[in-house]
Length: 418
Image (cartoon, rainbow, N blue to C red; front, top):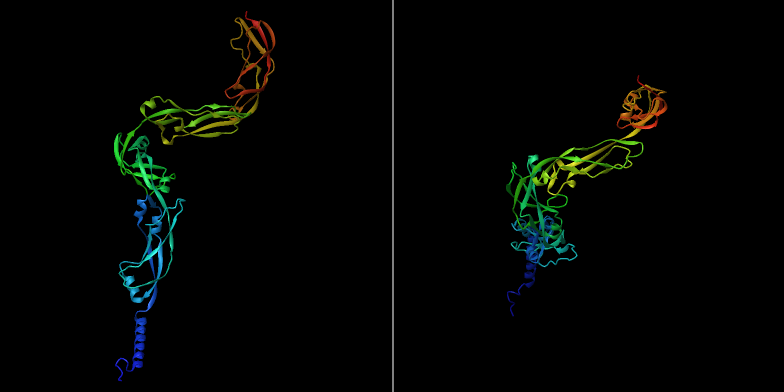
């Protein structure tokens, strides 16, 4: 039988086929070899609406969106080139459609999926990715009502202190993730008029703040625009009253006490101002005091509702305490007087030794004190004509001076005038 054309020289044909295949692989590996490349992609959150529909929200979405994932792919050079040049890049996707909220409040771990654009008609092997999973902080979407504090910003400091601003509506509902809403301490509405007029109305937007006065972002408001009415209060100047109670330490004396300021400007409703005559501070207990002391008060704590102190309302009370000193003085006997105590028609003469006394007081008074500053007198009322020995001498001392010891008597001779 004759061999068919297919089976003729079959060995040579198989060898040629093998050589051709080998050459083809050689050309492919030379012109379009298999390579490994790295691609970086930002994480994309998908299907957030699925969480929203269930009443939840992602709190750390900004953090997740800024996370970069590096992916190592293996593929042929031409395919990798096409992938690099494609307008649709490699994507790192976090799918939230099936994420379940953790009632412990802990973040949920969600896998990061790598999506390669379908426009590249080739297959790639994902060798590695730098981020396998991410922690997604999911919290209930809640709301809470807050009173609105209206604030007037103006360069006119006097008008700013007199301005009384009220927002309408007076409260707003704040919406957001539970931890963020719970961090809100107050809601403010700022207006910034160039000039402040009584009765003016301006629009403002609500802004949430935490307890440290920092703006709280990522919340929304039930009302995005408010009206703020500004009224200007009346002003009255009132005196600040201060009283002391108790006794300072032995050997010490209070020489002065005062407040700074002595009067204070108070603003508020005219009717309430008309009933206010002074700011009465609580008594200061000076028991046992041995040195100068200062005390701080806030005027607002002692004002009726609806009134407020201007210029910050701070009051400083100062108590001046000095240590007492003693001083020895000699009162000349001829300086003793009797005033109008001698019966009419009689005259008196005084004899005896000069009188030594000891006085005490603070240094600022005692240092300049002399015998001439002290009045010495005797009482002759009821004494008859004749000689009277050991008549007691009394002393009138300047303010702040007291008798610490000493004293004496004089001899008095009373005679009738002829």
